[in-house]
Each structure stands twice: as C-alpha cells, then as structure tokens.
Amino acid sequence: MSTGQHLKTAKSSTAKGLAQKGGSPAEPMSLRIDAETRSLIDRAANVLGQSRTDFMLSSARDRATDVLLSQSFFLLEAEDWQRFNDTLDQPPPPNAKLKALLARKPPWTAG
Image (cartoon, rainbow, N blue to C red; front, side, top):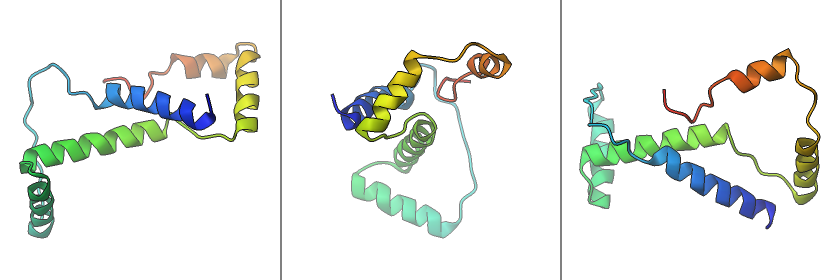
C-alpha cells in the first residue's frame, strides 16, 4: 500500500467517525449574521437543494472535520514514511513529557 493509500484509508475512516451526527437530540444554536452573508448562504443552499439549516450544519461539520484531521494526518514520501515507521518501532523510553502527551485527550474525541 502506498503512502497516499495509507493516508486516504486513515483519513476516510476517521472522517466518517468525526462527521457522523450523534444520536442525541438536536440542540438549538443561534448566531448573528449580516444580510450579505445570509444571502450568500441561501443561494448556495438553494443550488444544492438544501435548507439553510442543513447547508450550514453540513458546511460547519465538514470544516470542523477538516480542522481536526489537519491536526492528525500528514503526508510523507515513501522514504520518509519508512523512517517514520522505523521510529515508531523503536520508541524512546517513557519520560515526563511523553507521559503528559499520552495523558491528553485527542482533539477528535467528543467533549
């Protein structure tokens, strides 16, 4: 499997998990918006045959997923990918910074 295939597979499976709607009931959310931006959103939603709400939720969900994935995925050339994997196979001994890093909650998890 090539580096691009590794990235594509990992990104698509994680993106699906990040982008799924939760099973909990919808909660209200309000925001202030200028008339020009609202008109732009309405026109785009109309082109896609979506309601304003569906368009905004879909767009916000997609952007949030992209932001979180950009913090989690990277692309490497084949030689660099091999060095990366070799490094993972020979981890450093545990130290305070590593323990603190591993104790942090990943940004893609809820809450």
